[in-house]
Length: 275
Ligand SMILES: Nc1ncnc2c1ncn2[C@@H]1O[C@H](COP(=O)(O)OP(=O)(O)OP(=O)(O)O)[C@@H](O)[C@H]1O
Ligand SMILES: [Mg+2]
Image (cartoon, rainbow, N blue to C red; front, side, top):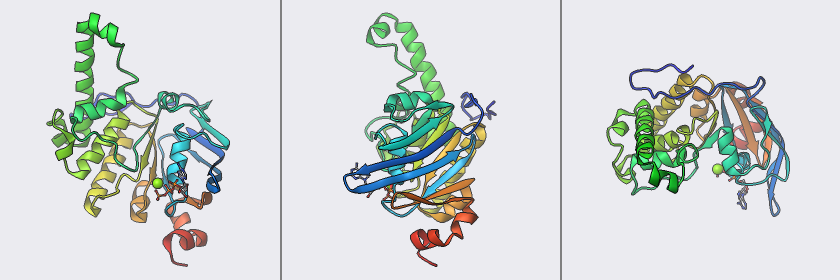
Protein backbone atom coordinates (compact mmCIF):
# COMPACT_ATOMS: atom_id res chain seq x y z
CA UNK A 1 0.00 0.00 0.00
CA UNK A 2 1.20 3.43 -0.85
CA UNK A 3 1.74 5.83 1.99
CA UNK A 4 -0.04 9.10 1.50
CA UNK A 5 0.96 12.50 2.75
CA UNK A 6 -1.12 15.66 2.65
CA UNK A 7 0.23 16.53 -0.74
CA UNK A 8 0.61 13.02 -2.08
CA UNK A 9 -1.75 11.69 -4.73
CA UNK A 10 -4.30 9.02 -3.96
CA UNK A 11 -2.68 6.59 -6.33
CA UNK A 12 -2.76 2.83 -6.15
CA UNK A 13 0.48 1.06 -5.38
CA UNK A 14 1.85 -1.18 -8.06
CA UNK A 15 0.86 -4.50 -6.51
CA UNK A 16 3.12 -7.45 -7.26
CA UNK A 17 1.07 -9.94 -9.27
CA UNK A 18 3.56 -12.78 -9.55
CA UNK A 19 6.73 -13.80 -7.72
CA UNK A 20 10.19 -13.47 -9.29
CA UNK A 21 11.78 -10.47 -11.00
CA UNK A 22 9.45 -7.91 -12.50
CA UNK A 23 11.49 -7.72 -15.68
CA UNK A 24 13.65 -10.42 -17.22
CA UNK A 25 15.42 -9.55 -20.45
CA UNK A 26 16.96 -12.56 -22.14
CA UNK A 27 19.54 -12.38 -24.94
CA UNK A 28 18.00 -9.33 -26.59
CA UNK A 29 19.43 -8.35 -29.98
CA UNK A 30 18.62 -5.55 -32.39
CA UNK A 31 20.54 -4.42 -35.46
CA UNK A 32 20.04 -1.45 -37.73
CA UNK A 33 21.64 -2.39 -41.04
CA UNK A 34 25.22 -3.22 -40.12
CA UNK A 35 25.01 -1.63 -36.65
CA UNK A 36 24.49 -4.06 -33.78
CA UNK A 37 22.70 -1.73 -31.40
CA UNK A 38 22.00 -4.58 -28.96
CA UNK A 39 23.85 -7.86 -29.00
CA UNK A 40 22.70 -10.69 -26.75
CA UNK A 41 21.87 -8.44 -23.79
CA UNK A 42 20.35 -10.02 -20.67
CA UNK A 43 19.49 -8.57 -17.29
CA UNK A 44 16.82 -8.68 -14.61
CA UNK A 45 15.09 -6.09 -12.48
CA UNK A 46 13.45 -6.80 -9.14
CA UNK A 47 10.27 -5.23 -7.85
CA UNK A 48 10.84 -1.87 -6.21
CA UNK A 49 14.41 -1.66 -7.51
CA UNK A 50 16.13 1.15 -9.36
CA UNK A 51 18.52 -0.01 -12.06
CA UNK A 52 21.03 2.37 -13.64
CA UNK A 53 21.60 1.68 -17.34
CA UNK A 54 24.85 3.30 -18.37
CA UNK A 55 27.34 3.32 -21.21
CA UNK A 56 28.97 5.66 -23.74
CA UNK A 57 27.06 7.41 -26.54
CA UNK A 58 25.62 4.97 -29.05
CA UNK A 59 26.05 1.95 -26.75
CA UNK A 60 22.40 0.83 -27.09
CA UNK A 61 20.74 2.33 -24.01
CA UNK A 62 17.85 4.06 -25.77
CA UNK A 63 17.49 1.14 -28.17
CA UNK A 64 16.94 -1.15 -25.20
CA UNK A 65 14.05 1.10 -24.06
CA UNK A 66 12.70 1.19 -27.60
CA UNK A 67 12.73 -2.59 -27.86
CA UNK A 68 11.29 -3.01 -24.37
CA UNK A 69 8.40 -0.67 -25.05
CA UNK A 70 7.54 -2.18 -28.43
CA UNK A 71 8.73 0.69 -30.64
CA UNK A 72 11.20 -1.74 -32.23
CA UNK A 73 10.76 -5.46 -32.65
CA UNK A 74 13.90 -7.32 -31.48
CA UNK A 75 15.83 -9.54 -33.90
CA UNK A 76 16.23 -12.09 -31.13
CA UNK A 77 15.70 -12.63 -27.43
CA UNK A 78 12.84 -12.29 -25.01
CA UNK A 79 11.26 -9.68 -22.76
CA UNK A 80 9.44 -11.23 -19.80
CA UNK A 81 7.47 -8.78 -17.71
CA UNK A 82 5.40 -9.43 -14.62
CA UNK A 83 5.00 -13.10 -15.42
CA UNK A 84 4.12 -12.63 -19.12
CA UNK A 85 6.04 -12.67 -22.38
CA UNK A 86 5.74 -9.21 -23.97
CA UNK A 87 8.41 -9.66 -26.65
CA UNK A 88 7.49 -7.74 -29.78
CA UNK A 89 4.17 -6.53 -28.36
CA UNK A 90 2.86 -3.23 -29.70
CA UNK A 91 3.59 -0.09 -27.63
CA UNK A 92 -0.02 0.22 -26.49
CA UNK A 93 -0.05 -3.36 -25.20
CA UNK A 94 3.26 -2.84 -23.38
CA UNK A 95 1.88 0.31 -21.82
CA UNK A 96 -1.27 -1.49 -20.71
CA UNK A 97 0.91 -4.24 -19.23
CA UNK A 98 2.40 -1.58 -16.93
CA UNK A 99 5.52 -0.06 -18.52
CA UNK A 100 5.68 3.73 -18.94
CA UNK A 101 8.60 5.84 -20.12
CA UNK A 102 10.01 9.27 -20.66
CA UNK A 103 11.99 10.14 -23.76
CA UNK A 104 15.54 11.39 -24.18
CA UNK A 105 14.19 14.35 -26.12
CA UNK A 106 11.27 16.08 -24.47
CA UNK A 107 7.86 15.26 -25.91
CA UNK A 108 5.86 17.90 -24.10
CA UNK A 109 3.45 20.07 -26.07
CA UNK A 110 4.70 23.47 -24.96
CA UNK A 111 1.56 25.40 -25.88
CA UNK A 112 -0.69 23.00 -23.96
CA UNK A 113 -1.35 23.16 -20.22
CA UNK A 114 0.30 21.08 -17.51
CA UNK A 115 -2.99 19.20 -17.09
CA UNK A 116 -3.30 18.41 -20.79
CA UNK A 117 0.29 17.25 -20.99
CA UNK A 118 -0.10 14.92 -18.02
CA UNK A 119 -3.40 13.54 -19.32
CA UNK A 120 -1.76 12.45 -22.56
CA UNK A 121 -0.33 9.64 -20.45
CA UNK A 122 -3.77 8.65 -19.22
CA UNK A 123 -5.55 8.06 -22.50
CA UNK A 124 -5.82 4.32 -22.11
CA UNK A 125 -7.66 4.61 -18.80
CA UNK A 126 -9.93 7.47 -19.73
CA UNK A 127 -12.19 7.98 -22.63
CA UNK A 128 -15.36 6.05 -23.23
CA UNK A 129 -15.49 7.34 -26.80
CA UNK A 130 -17.10 10.36 -28.40
CA UNK A 131 -20.63 8.97 -28.61
CA UNK A 132 -20.62 7.91 -24.95
CA UNK A 133 -19.29 11.32 -23.90
CA UNK A 134 -21.87 13.20 -25.99
CA UNK A 135 -24.79 11.35 -24.48
CA UNK A 136 -23.44 10.98 -20.96
CA UNK A 137 -22.34 14.51 -20.19
CA UNK A 138 -22.51 14.03 -16.46
CA UNK A 139 -20.37 10.90 -16.52
CA UNK A 140 -17.91 12.70 -18.80
CA UNK A 141 -17.75 15.72 -16.47
CA UNK A 142 -17.15 13.49 -13.46
CA UNK A 143 -14.44 11.62 -15.31
CA UNK A 144 -12.64 14.87 -16.19
CA UNK A 145 -13.01 16.18 -12.64
CA UNK A 146 -11.58 13.04 -11.15
CA UNK A 147 -8.76 13.07 -13.73
CA UNK A 148 -7.93 16.67 -12.77
CA UNK A 149 -7.92 15.74 -9.10
CA UNK A 150 -5.60 12.83 -9.70
CA UNK A 151 -3.25 14.78 -12.00
CA UNK A 152 -3.11 17.70 -9.55
CA UNK A 153 -2.33 15.40 -6.63
CA UNK A 154 0.41 13.75 -8.65
CA UNK A 155 1.87 17.12 -9.69
CA UNK A 156 1.70 18.29 -6.05
CA UNK A 157 3.71 15.29 -4.95
CA UNK A 158 6.53 16.61 -7.16
CA UNK A 159 6.05 20.35 -6.81
CA UNK A 160 3.35 22.58 -5.29
CA UNK A 161 4.40 25.13 -7.92
CA UNK A 162 3.07 22.81 -10.65
CA UNK A 163 -0.12 21.91 -8.79
CA UNK A 164 -1.04 25.59 -8.54
CA UNK A 165 -0.70 26.06 -12.29
CA UNK A 166 -2.45 23.06 -13.82
CA UNK A 167 -3.94 25.18 -16.64
CA UNK A 168 -0.80 27.18 -17.41
CA UNK A 169 1.06 26.43 -20.63
CA UNK A 170 4.15 24.28 -20.16
CA UNK A 171 6.30 26.44 -22.45
CA UNK A 172 6.97 29.09 -19.80
CA UNK A 173 8.19 26.66 -17.13
CA UNK A 174 11.80 26.04 -16.11
CA UNK A 175 13.48 22.82 -17.30
CA UNK A 176 13.18 20.94 -14.01
CA UNK A 177 9.43 21.55 -13.85
CA UNK A 178 9.06 20.32 -17.43
CA UNK A 179 10.96 17.15 -16.57
CA UNK A 180 8.69 16.63 -13.59
CA UNK A 181 5.66 16.94 -15.86
CA UNK A 182 7.12 14.31 -18.17
CA UNK A 183 7.55 11.97 -15.23
CA UNK A 184 3.99 12.73 -14.03
CA UNK A 185 2.75 11.93 -17.53
CA UNK A 186 4.39 8.52 -17.28
CA UNK A 187 3.20 7.92 -13.71
CA UNK A 188 -0.44 8.82 -14.31
CA UNK A 189 -0.88 5.43 -16.00
CA UNK A 190 0.14 3.81 -12.67
CA UNK A 191 2.92 1.72 -14.18
CA UNK A 192 4.77 -1.08 -12.48
CA UNK A 193 7.94 -0.16 -14.36
CA UNK A 194 9.08 3.39 -15.12
CA UNK A 195 11.77 3.92 -17.77
CA UNK A 196 13.61 7.25 -17.60
CA UNK A 197 15.87 8.10 -20.55
CA UNK A 198 18.43 10.65 -19.32
CA UNK A 199 16.03 12.65 -17.18
CA UNK A 200 18.79 15.05 -16.15
CA UNK A 201 19.76 16.08 -19.70
CA UNK A 202 20.03 19.86 -19.99
CA UNK A 203 19.69 20.51 -16.26
CA UNK A 204 22.15 22.03 -13.81
CA UNK A 205 23.91 19.89 -11.22
CA UNK A 206 21.59 21.19 -8.51
CA UNK A 207 18.44 20.60 -10.57
CA UNK A 208 19.65 17.08 -11.35
CA UNK A 209 19.99 16.28 -7.67
CA UNK A 210 16.56 17.77 -6.93
CA UNK A 211 15.07 15.57 -9.63
CA UNK A 212 16.82 12.51 -8.24
CA UNK A 213 15.30 13.31 -4.83
CA UNK A 214 11.91 13.32 -6.59
CA UNK A 215 12.61 9.97 -8.22
CA UNK A 216 13.66 8.38 -4.94
CA UNK A 217 10.57 9.80 -3.26
CA UNK A 218 8.32 8.38 -5.99
CA UNK A 219 9.84 4.96 -5.48
CA UNK A 220 9.30 5.26 -1.72
CA UNK A 221 5.69 6.40 -2.14
CA UNK A 222 4.90 3.48 -4.39
CA UNK A 223 6.52 0.48 -2.79
CA UNK A 224 6.30 -1.78 -5.82
CA UNK A 225 7.45 0.68 -8.48
CA UNK A 226 10.58 -0.38 -10.34
CA UNK A 227 12.65 2.12 -12.30
CA UNK A 228 15.33 1.88 -14.99
CA UNK A 229 17.22 5.12 -15.36
CA UNK A 230 19.60 5.92 -18.18
CA UNK A 231 22.05 8.49 -16.96
CA UNK A 232 25.41 9.80 -18.03
CA UNK A 233 26.60 11.27 -14.77
CA UNK A 234 28.16 8.52 -12.67
CA UNK A 235 27.64 10.44 -9.42
CA UNK A 236 23.89 10.45 -10.08
CA UNK A 237 23.84 6.73 -10.78
CA UNK A 238 25.79 6.04 -7.61
CA UNK A 239 23.22 7.93 -5.61
CA UNK A 240 19.98 6.52 -6.99
CA UNK A 241 20.54 3.02 -8.30
CA UNK A 242 20.38 -0.28 -6.44
CA UNK A 243 22.23 -1.99 -9.29
CA UNK A 244 23.78 -1.10 -12.65
CA UNK A 245 24.10 -2.55 -16.12
CA UNK A 246 26.82 -1.20 -18.40
CA UNK A 247 26.52 -1.36 -22.20
CA UNK A 248 29.26 -0.76 -24.74
CA UNK A 249 28.76 -1.16 -28.49
CA UNK A 250 25.49 -2.94 -27.82
CA UNK A 251 26.99 -5.51 -25.46
CA UNK A 252 26.60 -5.82 -21.73
CA UNK A 253 30.12 -5.45 -20.36
CA UNK A 254 29.35 -5.35 -16.63
CA UNK A 255 26.59 -5.50 -14.08
CA UNK A 256 26.29 -5.34 -10.31
CA UNK A 257 26.43 -2.66 -7.65
CA UNK A 258 27.76 0.79 -8.57
CA UNK A 259 30.99 -0.05 -6.75
CA UNK A 260 31.36 -3.28 -8.72
CA UNK A 261 30.90 -1.69 -12.10
CA UNK A 262 32.84 1.49 -11.31
CA UNK A 263 35.87 -0.59 -10.36
CA UNK A 264 35.58 -2.87 -13.40
CA UNK A 265 38.54 -2.35 -15.75
CA UNK A 266 36.48 -2.82 -18.93
CA UNK A 267 33.99 -0.22 -17.72
CA UNK A 268 36.73 2.22 -16.83
CA UNK A 269 38.27 1.82 -20.26
CA UNK A 270 34.96 2.08 -22.10
CA UNK A 271 33.12 4.64 -20.08
CA UNK A 272 35.12 6.40 -17.46
CA UNK A 273 38.10 6.90 -19.71
CA UNK A 274 40.69 5.90 -17.10
CA UNK A 275 42.37 2.57 -16.44
N1 LIG B 1 16.31 3.95 -35.63
C1 LIG B 1 17.61 3.74 -35.84
N2 LIG B 1 18.09 3.58 -37.09
C2 LIG B 1 19.41 3.36 -37.30
N3 LIG B 1 20.33 3.26 -36.33
C3 LIG B 1 19.91 3.42 -35.06
C4 LIG B 1 18.52 3.67 -34.74
N4 LIG B 1 18.40 3.77 -33.41
C5 LIG B 1 19.64 3.60 -32.91
N5 LIG B 1 20.54 3.39 -33.90
C6 LIG B 1 21.99 3.14 -33.74
O1 LIG B 1 22.12 2.16 -32.73
C7 LIG B 1 23.23 2.47 -31.88
C8 LIG B 1 22.73 2.60 -30.44
O2 LIG B 1 21.96 3.80 -30.35
P1 LIG B 1 21.22 4.24 -29.02
O3 LIG B 1 20.41 5.43 -29.35
O4 LIG B 1 20.55 3.08 -28.44
O5 LIG B 1 22.46 4.65 -28.10
P2 LIG B 1 22.48 5.32 -26.66
O6 LIG B 1 23.30 4.42 -25.79
O7 LIG B 1 21.11 5.65 -26.23
O8 LIG B 1 23.33 6.65 -26.94
P3 LIG B 1 23.20 8.14 -26.32
O9 LIG B 1 23.94 8.11 -25.02
O10 LIG B 1 23.89 8.99 -27.32
O11 LIG B 1 21.75 8.47 -26.17
C9 LIG B 1 23.86 3.73 -32.44
O12 LIG B 1 24.92 3.36 -33.29
C10 LIG B 1 22.72 4.37 -33.22
O13 LIG B 1 23.22 5.15 -34.28
MG1 LIG C 1 20.11 7.40 -25.84
